[in-house]
Image 1: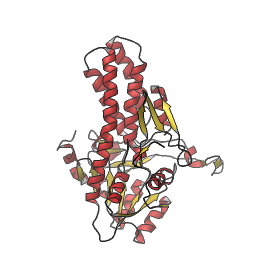
Image 2 (image 1 turned 180 degrees about the vertical axis):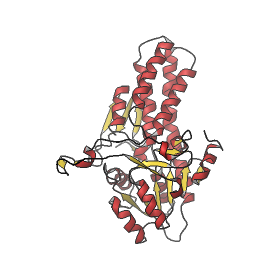
Image 3 (image 1 turned 45 degrees about the horizontal axis):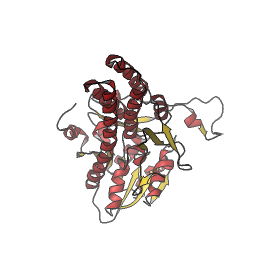
Image 4 (image 1 turned 90 degrees about the vertical axis):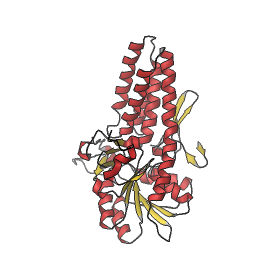
Length: 353
């Protein structure tokens, strides 16, 4: 297992290849997939071998470099045309996760601004992909620290509920929502994590629980529809989730089920936090209705492994994300601090772009 100090790294640059933890096989099997072509990276993102908005951004950065490495021309103009084709391929994989588009834009900016031979552009692209990778780990640790400061104070240790997986597996390492959990655990302020199983792909049951077990963080798994009951019983002190895209007003797209979790948290007067890097904030969107919602194959609902759960003739609706209104969010935790949704622009230095 590729871990350093009990940390998991889902994207690894090694020997001129990208190694990805195949998250579709966890927790039963730990497998590394070697990626050497941009087409293979696109498939890995689409099929959720790598998933989580920040991790997708890191993978896409390397995907652009792999595509650049495949282009056989010394002509700068032809090279850039081919590179745009690689960018188009990668953009089509996951429409909701804005980090994907952010990373691709940053990579293309490097390509267009680098003066020199094609080989020099290729090397600049690799350097940028590696910078995106390293920056995300640093960012997540800052989110963890700011999240720790934002959590409610109480004499006893906290119990935090989270949804889906926003841990090391969803980032370059450490995590966003689970980054806050890790910081609270390290500081001695955490008693336990409650993890929603997160239907239909069960990222909470398969991935969040796995990460907590790796680091010996006490974790209790519940089904998604148990959250309100647990809150009513006084078992939850705070909810911390990640995000795949945040609009300028603080409306947040995250894994399906997050919206209902925010509603029941509000009803029980429990703080609801979103933890995400600034690269997840899409300041070009004024509010959440403008966020595109990915719909995935209905097989995720009607089938578990080889077992069919439903009778023939049933129709299916499988949105992968929902949008939580800013009014339900206590604070959005970024690498620059925790901010009320209506003051999110302050995290960006006072800029709404």
